[in-house]
Image (cartoon, rainbow, N blue to C red; front, side, top):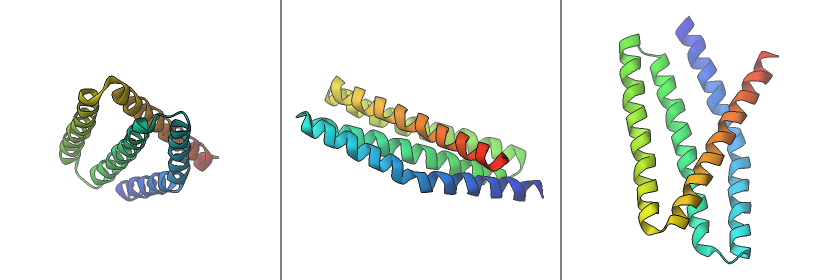
Length: 133
């Protein structure tokens, strides 16, 4: 019974985030258009890469949490540890490639990732507050 309620809660959180992703995509598009108007075409790809990296990072976290909720405690610990290592590896590889291209691209990708990830956490917190009241 507890596992079923955890899974239902994770599905609700994931659905909330999927619905609000349109907002994040719109923000990334506006940022890209602003960069184009400022003559910084090469940074558009970095902004979109940071946004997509944040999106996939968050979705993989949610998927791992849902899988862990359906598992025993020992198996859940293993799932979360492997997931954490994979996600951190993914972020490290993309940011390492960006820093080798240029510091400007690295900063644009890293800042965009951070902003979008922080915004995703705010969306989740707001959805949780709405669900409680």
